Structure formats: C-alpha cells, structure tokens
Length: 362
Ligand code: NAD
Ligand code: GLY
Image 1 (cartoon, rainbow, N blue to C red):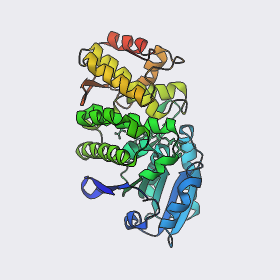
Image 2: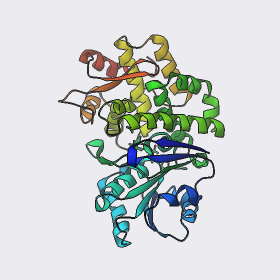
Image 3: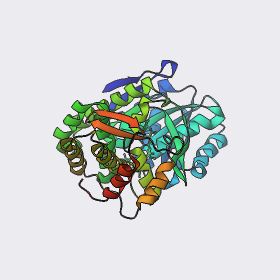
Image 4: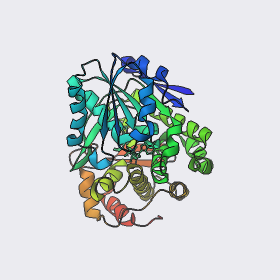
C-alpha cells in the first residue's frame, strides 16, 4: 500500500493506493466529521462494490443515492437526486458524501458536496482507471451543460482518496484503455521518463498486472499532486493537465455525450495537439511517431470522428474554459515531457491540423 499527499495547507489530504482497500474502515472513517454518510454511486457500480463500502461504515448513519449510469446523466437534473437524498435523510452541515464510481460520479458528488449547505466534506473512492489517475485528485467538480462540458462546477477538495486497484478488474477493456490516455498525458506533459516506462510496459498494463498498475497510478497521482499543489485554481501551470482536452471536449460535445469516452476523446485531442505542434516545428517527426504508436498500442483512437465537421469542431472548441476573448488557448508539446499553454499559433495551421485529423496516421 502506498500513501501520497496532496499538499494544500489546511486542505491537504492523503491518497491511499493499494489492493483490497474498499471495505477497510481505517482509510475512511477517520476522515468523517460526524456519523452521517451519504454514499453516491450508480446502477453499474452499486451491485459490484456498494456492500463492501457500506461494511466499512458499520455503526454509522448511512444512506445511498444510486444515480443512472452515463456521461449523459452528468447534469443539473440528476444532480438534484443527491440533494433529495441529503434533505430527505436530514443530513446536516457536518455530514460526508462518499463518491463510489468513475469520474462522472466523482465530479457530481464533489459538486453536490461543494453546494450542499454551502459546502460539506466528501471522500473519493474512484473505481475506473481514469478516475484513479486523474479526476479523483485535485478538487475539480461539476456537471455538463448541453452547450459545454464541465461548464458548471466548483473547486472542492476531498478529505481523502482511496484507490483500490482491484476494482479495475471488473472494468471493461474500452474503459480501461480510456484511462490509459490520461496516464500517457502525465508522461507527455512533464515526465519523459514515465512516458518511456509506459512504452516499455504496454503489455503489463493491458494485462492489468498489479505491480504495473500500482506504479502507473502512483506516478500519475504524484505528477498530478505536484501540479495541483503549485496551482490549485488553475491560474497557469495546472492548465497543462488539459493537454488534448480542448479538442477532446469538442469531440465529446459535438458527437453527443457518451458516444466517445472522455479518455478516447482526450487521445484524439492529444493527437491533434501533436500534429499542430509538429506543424509549428515544436515537435520532431520521431516524437510524433512515438506518440501515435503508443496510443494505437494502448487501443486508443487517434483520428477525429468522421461525423464531425471542422466547423463543428471549431464552434465547440470556442466554448472552453481556456478561451480568452474568443481566442482558443491550446496546450501544445515542444518535446516528450515538455508542454506549454499558448495562443501563439497560426490560425491557418490550426485549421489545416483539423482537416488532416481525420486520418489515423500523421
Ligand atoms: P464514468 O464515470 O462514466 O465510468 C465509466 C464506466 O465504467 C461507467 O459505465 C461506470 O459505471 C463504469 N464503472 C465504474 N467503475 C467500474 C468498475 N470498477 N467496474 C465496472 N464498471 C465500472 O467515466 P470515467 O472515465 O471514469 O470518468 C469520465 C468523467 O470524468 C468525465 O465526465 C470527465 O469530464 C471527468 N473528469 C474529471 C476530471 C477532474 O479533474 N475532475 C478529470 C478527468 C475527467
Ligand atoms: N483534469 C484536469 C485537472 O484536474 O486540472
């Protein structure tokens, strides 16, 4: 078992990473403020893990909110179900919400915790690879709007994050690969050694080897914790974590939520960022080749979906939290392990990149 720390002064918290952690009270109950616990999960995860998590809270006043499963339900209407549970159970300001599930459940539960009675505590128990390496850490919470992804939300840090890598064994292959896209992201942003490690360990990762998973999750979380500790509210450095996301969000919104998985859209978006970086002569052809090859080996898509036009992509990208005065800011690469946020790119090259993005290879 490994313990990492997110250092944020009086909002610091631990990340526990290991096997067989789900039913263990010692990783959960010390982080409660009173005896009221609402576990928020969904229809898919509840039959798999809810009983185990409930057993850790034996003797506490527990309630559960079981939401419909899917990105298309990450909205204000479904969020209300969490408030219904909290109010009907008369939970007070010292209650704790527990998010048991993937990034959708984590983001919604965190946002409900940020808003309920102007802010209550919450704990993250991420059960997808994507949530374990990214969304459960760092305190970004929220829901989608029909016109833009994650457009309504709040920064609200959890009390602790409990990552049980055994829970990944029930995840389907497509979801698992989607999580690997965010793992690759950390290597590309500022950890070339980790990128190389991933290249050499694709087989072990795809086989869900416990040691490989533990290393990849710990290294990813450490990378994220370092960035969040320096720039919690995304005034600069943290924006680098959005490599591929501006393009990716446009794909998710443009195709309809749920059609492309978040991690798949990020993989395609990262390939577009890679192409544009190469056009700007920031990135060498050999690096471009390595990036595309790694995504393909990890069974991730690299091409823009044919149902989206370039015009639709651009329109969707303009509804982005990094857009300033109508200009789309992008995270681009000037090497493997070197990323920068910029609006200094030629608009013609940007459009050319989108047009070329329908091909699976550059
Ligand atoms: P998800 O939450 O939709 O989970 C994927 C699927 O796996 C769902 O069907 C879920 O029910 C199922 N599932 C979850 N755990 C399982 C398990 N152990 N076994 C079997 N099935 C399981 O998707 P996700 O990829 O985890 O998260 C994507 C979401 O995370 C997006 O909404 C994205 O915007 C958000 N996100 C947030 C941040 C952040 O910093 N807050 C970062 C990245 C992504
Ligand atoms: N997933 C991007 C961030 O947490 O900042």
